Image (cartoon, rainbow over all chains, first blue to last red; front, side, top):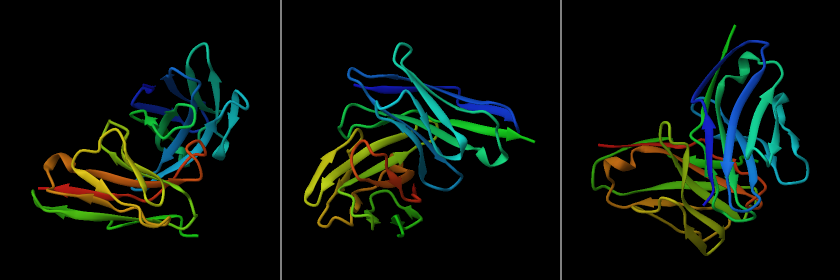
Length: 113
Length: 112
């Protein structure tokens, strides 16, 4: 069965600094990969997804993620953090075209002024 | 479009009581899901549906039941509530399993 590991339950960056949130997956078949963001007291919102079309995926709010098969990773980055990026971020993996999506435990991003 | 709506937003239950969490989507999505979110655990899939009349178990289905009589609605039933069911419950819908999901705002449930 597939699984997701998010390294670091909390990440703190200064405003304007690079954001790097790490996600590693395990899957017996080529997976579909997703990043979601959750603001306080809200549901999850899709940031971006990898579906094998391109290894570098651009999402909303200036975020992007790169699929690296050799490293089984799908890390999320943003060149310059903004205060409004403070939220919890979840990586999720789904095997090829079924409903068994698995979420990571989440990484809480704090942005310091 | 309202997207995915959930009611109630918050509920306190006594042990052994039952309740139904409501979920409605107006995007004509065939796929709908129920997740629970516990601190530090991410989201766990409880049940899902691939269309009206079709439901299946997810990772943590025990203590829950679902039905899908229409495309729009996907209620989650808790029978004999237990403290272990204290959680935040999210309903989601999607066009396909790989398109990414739209989530509702969640229902916070406390079982005492």
